Length: 83
Image (cartoon, rainbow, N blue to C red; front, side):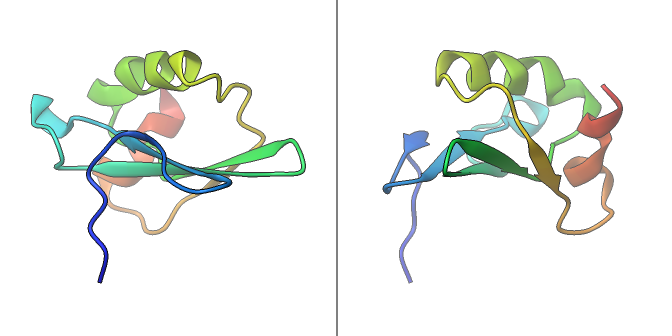
């Protein structure tokens, strides 16, 4: 199994975003998949992380996000939708 811990683009169309859960690096990873000019964010993180995540998406030129895929209903994966 491959372990990817470097934030940013790691293949032709996929990006890793470190959501810094509770300000801890590598505790919560989000992904953006880009295909034909459309971007999908996989999970959104918690509400406390949403500003940091938005800033990172902007820095990596990954805005706008066109779709969001929520993998499951835990707060640290979905609360960012509300922020």
